[in-house]
Length: 276
Image (cartoon, rainbow, N blue to C red; front, side, top):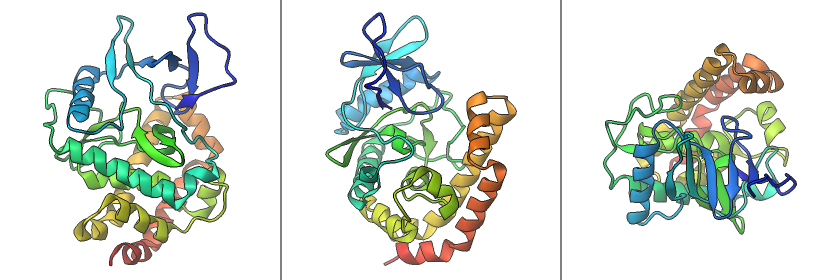
């Protein structure tokens, strides 16, 4: 999500923020605040975001409050956000390593916080095995704020849910490596061929992934890809026009089959690159 500098001002002085799919056209910046649709978990999520700041993690917006119209207000996080087709500056190894560092910072702070078990956290992209921390679950380029070529903050925690830290790393890897076959990657990452095994190692190193988690990561990426496919399938079945259009424009279910085959075929290469 980033400011659309070409968009007209709204009567109340707000600026449209572009990026993302679920809340497209419904997110505005008004001065130092972002005004957007509130997720149903907003009370628990806002408490968690405030607690993250108290535990030293400054890489997330701070909630300001909820409005009677079902919207939320959060502090605006200044910086740059990469939107597809992704620019070259977002695909450097420096950028990738900084994403791993920010994600580790989030998880370190989250590990010190209890998960609110009363909240009905969304299962859309959640770890099917559950876990001890509140994962972001959607660390895609649209949701990472950069300054001077380095990731500094994560935004849009709408899909946050309990899970394993490794699950969040796998979900991030899908977008930032990216864990896509070359044909699928070309449409969104036009800067040239990205060496997936090497970039996977950069992400693991910058995050500080343990040897045991490195060995497991390729399998969890495959699991995460299956969950993402089910997420898209559910929205297409519901008739969501945004996801129906995206599916058609990106090659339909054939593309998802090709990605899964590519992941399975190259699993040994990924494992070899990850392990010391």
